[in-house]
Image 1 (tube, rainbow, N blue to C red):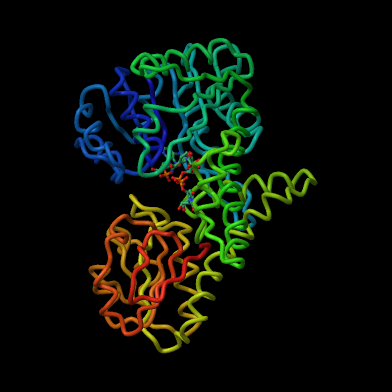
Image 2: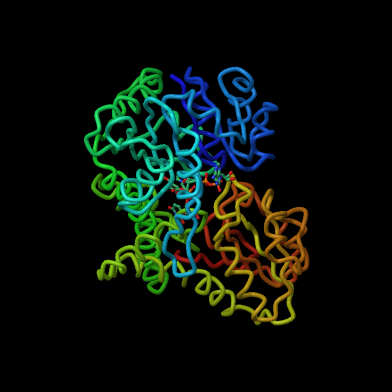
Amino acid sequence: MDVSVIGCGYVGASVAACFADLGHDVVAVDVDEERVEAIEDGRPPLHEPGLDELVAANAGERLRATTDYDAVPDTDLTFLAVQTPSNDDGSIDTSVVEAAAGMLGEALAGTDEHAVVVKSTVIPGTTADLVAPAVADAAGMTVGEDLHVGMNPEFQREGSAVGDFLDPDKIVLGADGDVEAYAALHEAYDPLREALDHEVPVVETGTREAEMIKYANNAFLAAKVSLANDLGNVCKEYGVDAYEVTDAIGLDHRIGAPFLRSGVGWGGSCFPKDVAAIIAAARAKGYEPELLAAAVSINDRQPERLLSLLDRHVDVAGERVAVLGLAFKPGTDDVRNSRAVPTVEGLRERGAEVVAYDPVAAGNMRERFPGIEYAESAAAALEGASGAVVVTDWPEFADLDGEFDAMADPIVVDGRRVVERREGITYEGLTW
Ligand SMILES: NC(=O)C1=CN([C@@H]2O[C@H](COP(=O)(O)OP(=O)(O)OC[C@H]3O[C@@H](n4cnc5c(N)ncnc54)[C@H](O)[C@@H]3O)[C@@H](O)[C@H]2O)C=CC1
Ligand SMILES: O=C(O)[C@H]1O[C@H](OP(=O)(O)OP(=O)(O)OC[C@H]2O[C@@H](n3ccc(=O)[nH]c3=O)[C@H](O)[C@@H]2O)[C@H](O)[C@@H](O)[C@@H]1O
């Protein structure tokens, strides 16, 4: 099948490379020349484990990249995978999707038939009410006749995007009853399902439902972590180990073990953006989503709770304090909405001299905080520090041991339950 993917970011690049590897002829389109050049040269346009091999293996053959939309009409199906950032009030900014839909429509003018599928995360109604008319008007096509429109949300995580795409828990196909759109999506996904040794549930639904499934999925997971944090904060007040509690409740199949790790909270490019967007969308309709709003405020509070535990042991004004971990989660250099940002801000407000360490994310955090010190290793960050806070659960922090002896005052406040408690350090867990 000939497939085009608009947008070569985290989602678009991995989706394009995976579909090519599964045997489709894929053309990836982006306005960013560097990303296009990278793919054309056989290099991944961004860091994502496994993407390098897939791009190298398929570039120049089943995977091509271009800045030119003229390549699109030769394909049968186009996925729109451009960014959907937040407006200042948290609502979704659809201007990039709308612009891409218009460009796509212009390129499709004169085409006999085409399927357009939104992969970006968008508020219910965006596909049917904004994208479909934008493409149809620019192309001079008619939705449901020669233009088939669908919505296929993506559930991959950063750091495991390729693996998640190739072995999904579910495939959601929204197409408002358009048989041709469902058929095109099935044709795209059939090789993936055939390559697996187990069945993948395929949910055929409407475009609004598909859009909402994506938000509900992220909102549920974010709220699950916030509930674990809320309960964890209660545990801490009572001297109860929240991890023993969540390990036990996670055994109840109705609860499930994943996403119960309490600590300094959730960050990244998606949970904060998507929870804010669905809250804003609810409010726009006059509904107050109280539980989701509480999930956000609990999340916003956790970094300050982390620092207040440090305050119990040391007045950090004028003192060197180590921040271990800057990425929003391990396995990535992404610092967008990382809990390290409010943590560093809180330390600086207290007058601390911050020395930060992250195995890969220091470069990105330097753009946000150029004025703090960045250490080359956790050991170097800890040396002479009067306190340390752990913000990211990088596995290497679990191996720290004698390094704490070089601290001026070995106070360790762990926001991720990754450091081993040991003799000789004053250890505080955020929720244990
Ligand atoms: N990052 C992730 O792990 C996940 C993201 N999503 C959703 O997928 C969507 C895309 O996210 P990312 O890939 O992270 O974004 P990104 O910002 O990494 O990539 C978007 C790409 O689209 C390109 N682009 C923008 N306008 C264009 C146009 N008119 N024509 C062609 N290319 C254009 C940009 O240059 C950029 O390379 C968002 O809605 C996001 O919420 C969904 C699941 C996972
Ligand atoms: O829409 C998206 O873009 C993606 O958002 C998340 O993926 P991602 O943000 O890459 O990372 P997660 O592994 O979900 O972690 C998100 C945040 O939650 C935190 N978290 C996660 C799990 C947990 O138990 N505790 C916890 O604090 C992590 O530290 C991290 O800051 C979802 O897991 C993906 O399914 C979704 O496709």
